[in-house]
Picture (tube, rainbow, N blue to C red):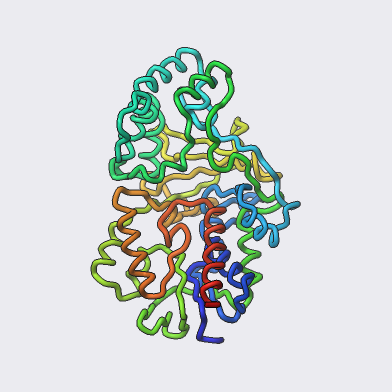
Length: 407
């Protein structure tokens, strides 16, 4: 095998696969790039397995958003548009013995009148409504934005479950991703019995008709042929010689793998080691259940802290000819870890947006780029991004790299 490459890509998830195809589409010879993937199959958190006769996404719930045409153009090349079902998102929150559409503040009208009044009165006293300054920590922001009742009954317990760290450690810089519903829109939705405000991500989404979400990434990997090496653990990276495992040399390394892994195979400056140690992440366990649930939701958020899992994915409501559902649980809350085929542990699932993270990532990013290492994707940028965002950013990077190579 060739041992000198322009680009070596660490990780064969959506980001790594997409940047590889983006480089080729922009003129890079396939023989000039190499993807190294430690697992026996590509796809990362978007991998699928057949469980109980139907696909199950073993990294949790992943769906294809329709907003970015460049992403769809790439994806449909490997799994054509005709092979996807289109859904209007139905996501719900279990609250006060009911299932209410998400986001809660836009759908209070679905509750009984007394509950609506409870929440509306609380929101009316929120700091954002009274035009008080926005706080910097997450838990204080939630009370400022939505009032104490939604904070105490839904947002605080739900986020404590999913992250399993003190919420005052979280920043607010990432909350632009949350639905934005003003108090006026909340009132209007209760009066008109209709949701108001911005839609959350995946308001309309696609899911394969005959496969799990992992099929598209499997096909993308297969198309790379000799440019992809699976079952390949990284044992060493020498940044002085840009040599990986003592056998592959790169002009540039594109890293989509967790920074926490770098300490295992690369000599790092002490300050970079310390920065990496301060990055936080959540591990998630996925467990399949064969019985169907009585709900039309595609997924359901569960804030009750007496229940270990934080989300249910109702597989039978989006995966053709399937039954059952799967749960997602922060691994710190998993009460038992069965060994059967329907249980999956994902050590690196969610990067956590701590108050310190932006400064830490900026420092790591500067160090990486000074050594011809380019961070990319969920783990390179340490950001909880959906797969469509990961693909879009990978395509943008590929265009930039090929443009720079022509200078």
